[in-house]
Length: 192
Image 1 (cartoon, rainbow, N blue to C red):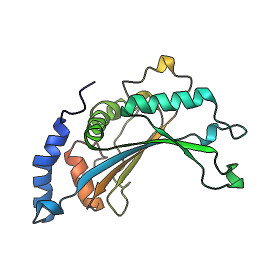
Image 2: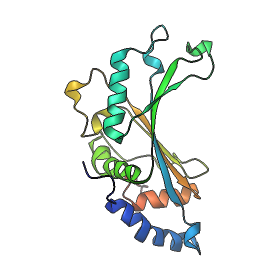
Image 3: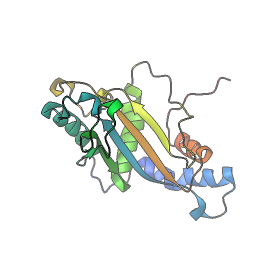
Image 4: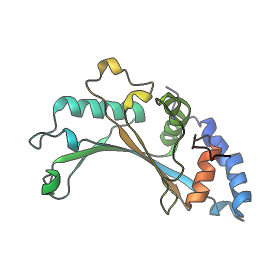
């Protein structure tokens, strides 16, 4: 794995050409008005694997090891804040495992996601470009962890997906869409 202190070509491109194109395209006068990529959050819901409100050790180990391998840092276990009887969830029961990536680890993960993981998705036809919220943050989901080349599926007992949220600061959906498209994010192309 590449040393975390090295800047990726994607980060260099974002801070140089992409930011310049973005400022020209959207009429931003000052470099401080341009959006920044602040963090990437990976989240795996484990609530559906619960039996009698206990998290099985092999499930915990698999999800924790997957997120640790993919992100390069230790994930945390999220517990339910309140009880919901319809979902068979009790307050304090484990419900998700998440990790937040910032700075160099965020750029290394985004580069691996765009160049290695997304092209390995089965029957891939492009990501939806409508999954932006009002603040310009992009959300996507993966159905299985096998798309990451770091994961050895021979050692995995079951497959699980994950939710990936790419968080921008000072952005709108149009600005974030433009920035991610310039960085190489493979969105669905409009029919011409």
